[in-house]
Amino acid sequence: MQPKIDINLLAKERFGIPTLRPYQQLVIQRILELDGSESDHEGVVVTLPTGSGKSICFMLPALVVEGLTIIVYPLLSLMNDQIRRFTERGIGCVCIQGGQTPAERNALFASLADKRPRIVVTNAECLAQGSVFTALARFPISLLVLDEAHTIVRWGEGFRPAMASLGPIIAHLPLRQILCFTATADEQIIKGLSRLIFSGEQPHLVRGSSDRQNISYHAIHTLCKEQAITSLLQDPAHRPALVFCSTREKTKLACLSFLLSNPSLPCRYYHAGLGKEERKALEAWYQKQEQGVLFATNAFGMGVDKKSIRMVIHHDLPSDVLSFLQESGRAGRDGNPARSVVLMDGDETPSELFSLFSSTSMCFRSALLKSLGETMESCSGCDVCNHTQFRSREGEQVIMRCVALHPFSYSIHALASFLQVRKPWYADSGLLDTWREREIQSAIRNLAKHGMLSSTKGKVPKLYLSPSQWVAHLTARRYALTMKV
Image (cartoon, rainbow, N blue to C red; front, top):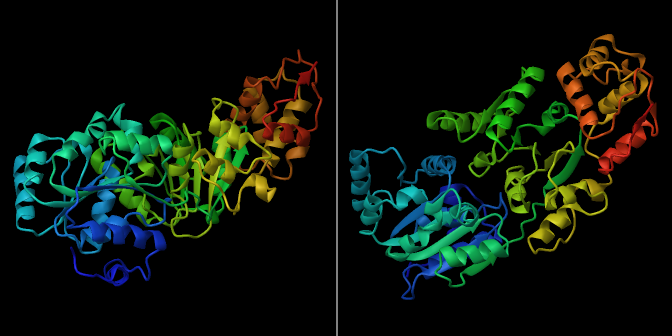
């Protein structure tokens, strides 16, 4: 058993934290009390929202426990970020990752034998290697930490089989405690961890609310996502920002499109297809940016520890609520107000999230928490509860008015050029000044794609609804406007 330690004092001296939060104290105290006990190794699953300081819950005990602390991450960006944080605090650690030579590995294990670093950072694939497993098994291991543990269930039985195979490896390591940390975990995740990591035994669960009170949730139903992003991020208060896209190709194209309209803003794109050194350089670049915009796939999200992100934009809807909360949770980690904005243009596949953010009557925050089996005390900000629409629809109204007033026998290109160059009387107020011709064309195509336009055979079409009524129907996902000969 370790001697009595003032964990708040240690947190202040080593991490600059004035006072630990209640959940941090609870988790840390439990870890230290169990270290060196005579019982079989303990299993703990800790779910705390992003930005609540989960990392301190295992970083601080790693300084105190007698044996090694092994931290397993699902992503290289997470490994790099954690090594950076340890280095900044003067905490010795070693990293076992792919691409290391036998000489490098031997030097690494020699340093562990000399009891210099007490922390090992690695991933599931490296831990499963026979040489690594055998070398680590020679040392007493106090803590095995599985960070972002939900990925073990979500990815392990798909494209990352090494993650699902961690259980048998763990069972043969001389360790005291297994700690699983994640920001989001529903019952399916808990059951999966019990089966894959804890040999069917029920782990001790420490669960904090997944609600992030400082994040407000918004949905924008738009005719052109690229222009909506430009409109949102023109406000410096919304930067630095993170824009999540569903694929590598979309990430690159959305970034390049944004740069065309905003060449003066620092902007980059990031995805797993980039080279290792390039990804590391991008992570370092984004950390230093006070007004930077990063377009990324969700592979980057879990590796972000940038506390000052003011806005997360979801260019595409994630697959489920857990993925959405992982993405939105990158915002406002400093505790200051931040926004999570979902963009929808009518191409979304029907899903739980689609229904949630299409609602005009159900609180976004309440619905998100309900999906995780949690209840909400009060909503600190969403479109529904605030009776606000976090969007600027005037430019889209101009486009719809143009389509209504001019023969649809014009080509999309000609109609877009008319709006961009000739500036009709109803666009004199400059509402389309931020729209590029390509974006106007995209908006008109979107109208046509969803059946809101029909051929006018050269005649001037008429509107059943006014532009403002059209916007209201579009917002409610009822595409009710028709164009009539």
